[in-house]
Length: 314
Ligand SMILES: [Zn+2]
Image (tube, rainbow, N blue to C red; front, side, top):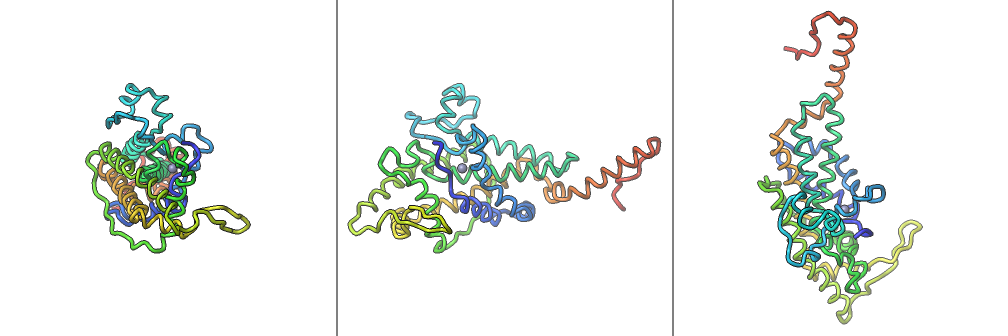
């Protein structure tokens, strides 16, 4: 799979905004303070596909290529079982999520230890945004199959229909759901269970599109849309709505499931990192750096003097 993106840019960004609302107070303040950046960076992983050759394979896994199933295993064990080339050709989404999760735990656990807190803050935000993106993708059924765009079943275009056009057409009518982050004790098990639950929906996603298309009196499937100076052929709102109804609101359900998953994974990474004080450890880089700079400056001026700068005021 190389041509399809994931949830469109808007849903990916909204997923992060909704995920933040589900966080408990020890981390809510930090993520809320950086909401804008987390939303902007929510789609960096998709943008990287243009510049990083390995990036595309990180957004999906073709479960159907593992005809006898695939065990939950780490990257090293999977490489031994299937070879790295095979894994990359079938997509490496679950291992990518686990890897970025572990990187985020390490980065958060360094909070307040390193002097370069500005760089550390940047890494925490980048990893959190990427992690949220990959988890969003893991909740899209068509990211778990080789027939990702209906190309084997005469349903080309179904990828964008499910994750972009149904979202855009129905989003205004969603009732909203209460979601709450929970601690995930076994991240690998959680990743695989979410991916398998997405995969379990593939059949229905494909079947219902055909069923709606063939129904007598069904709305036109395709229509032209003008945006600015661009004319494009996209699924009609009527078709999107009927398809959404036929799936029983699956897109909305999986959107909120993804948002809750993102919040839970961010929160779990923080717990596994030893519950650091992110707000004070990362949010005040300028003050910390100023003190360091002053201290270096005075040390250079008075090399033989005992240092008193940097003590906390009593
Ligand atoms: Zn993606």
